[in-house]
Image 1 (tube, rainbow, N blue to C red):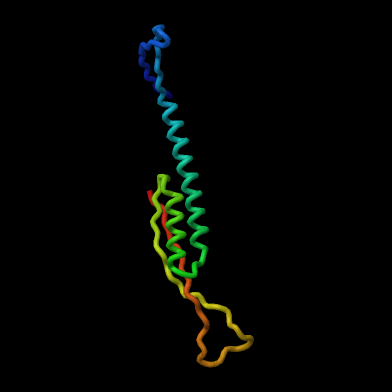
Image 2 (cartoon, one colour):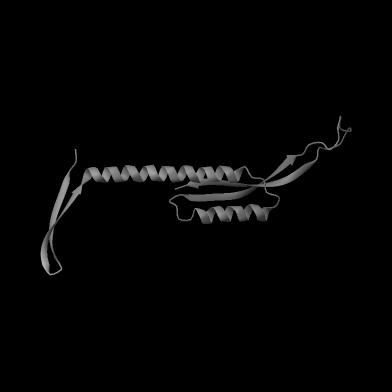
Length: 122
């Protein structure tokens, strides 16, 4: 059930006095709060999608990963949610360059890749 608050004012518009009545509804507040929660949830889902896409990218060097994180932070600077991030280093095994069984004692070729790791917080 909605509760209403009313207040009246008088104002002069173009030299004529008018009586203004302002009505405030509690039902409207609930709808606004619901809409705001829905909008925040949608924005968070979009932000998490961007973060998931960025997390899947392998960077060749640390400055590239840092630049990508900075770009994401600038895109998300006006949002309600904060982005907490760091850069992780992984060693990835490459495919063997030759066919057949590797020579005894030969190490698998690896390369170093950097990943942007981020979290969403309020």
